[in-house]
Image (cartoon, rainbow, N blue to C red; front, side, top):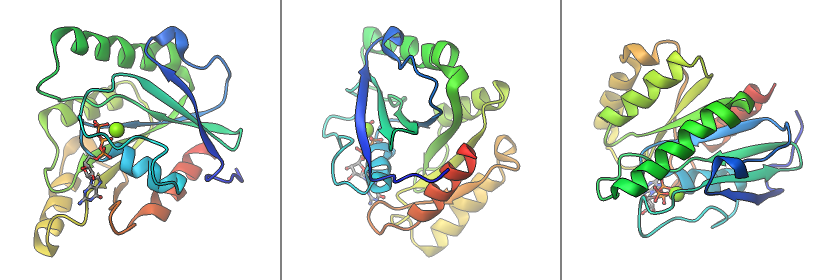
Length: 196
Ligand SMILES: Nc1nc2c(ncn2[C@@H]2O[C@H](COP(=O)(O)OP(=O)(O)OP(=O)(O)O)[C@@H](O)[C@H]2O)c(=O)[nH]1
Ligand SMILES: [Mg+2]
């Protein structure tokens, strides 16, 4: 697929599964805990400073945002999980949207980019998400974010720890830093590979 990824626009901000796009364009979804660096990654990929909002109030945006790339496919920003200060009703909204995405909209998900903070490592919620993706047989790869944060020794150890997780056996893990731009081309290449 030959596309110009900088030709990207926010098409739909869905607060309800009924608002997900009705067309059949393939979708690459971005999943991760709140504050993992999802918006920063998406902005870096698109080559724009702030198409996806980098939030000052993490975990507060409970919508699924569909960015259409070059009329060809969608980059899908899923709401983050693991935000401690979420109310019960916010949590219920999250579940409804994400469950809805992977059931009703999910037949169109080509692959998931699962983000894991390289400094923090895989949290309990991350492991639950990874288990879900495996069980549901949804193709996915891991983007290890904020790769500029750990020092060289920590970084090698953290990557080794991720690679050793049974749930990540055979899964591509790409270190990425929005700060330095490291890994950007590799993530774009992985998306294009998934799209075929
Ligand atoms: N050092 C460093 N900081 C980063 C990087 N990426 C994101 N951050 C910081 O991490 C915080 C969260 O980044 P966002 O991109 O808003 O993360 P998010 O996952 O979209 O967060 P929510 O949408 O609020 O859940 C911000 O303060 C960013 O500046 C990175 O690669 N390196
Ligand atoms: Mg965000």
